[in-house]
Image 1 (tube, rainbow, N blue to C red):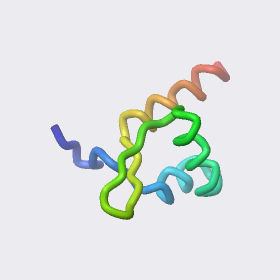
Image 2: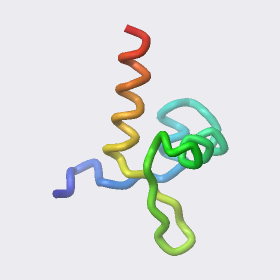
Image 3: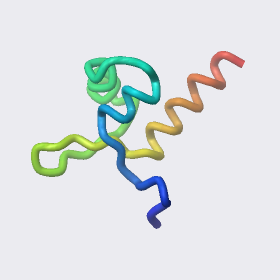
Image 4: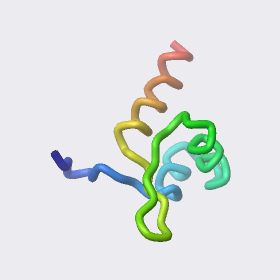
Length: 62
């Protein structure tokens, strides 16, 4: 099921949302903290995985 926001987001969009560098997002991918897929030469982040990671950050602060 696709949402209006889409199932996949770019590395740059994820970096912008967290106000970090693209390098930091790649480190999260390599450390398997967020899931991603390779489409051709492009890397895309699974939005659900990213949203769960962000929710975990917020829950950790509360």
